[in-house]
Image (cartoon, rainbow, N blue to C red):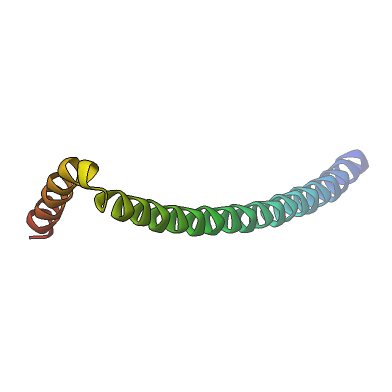
Length: 91
C-alpha cells in the first residue's frame, strides 16, 4: 500500500514539473514569434516605402517620356485608357 502512495506522489511531482517545463517552452516560443513578427513588420514597412518611391520614380519617367514628341504618340492614349478604366473601376 505504501508503494502506491509513493507512486502517486512521484506521479504528481513529475506531472507538475512537466507542466511547468511545457509552459516555459510555450512562453519561449511565443517570445521568439513576437520577435519574428516585429522583424517581418519592419521588412514590410521598408518594402512599402520602397514601392512608393519606385512608383513616384516611374510616374516621373513616364511624364518625361510623354514630353518627347515621338513617344508621346504612343504613351498618351495608353495613359488615357488607364485613367478611364480607373474611373469605371471606382464606381
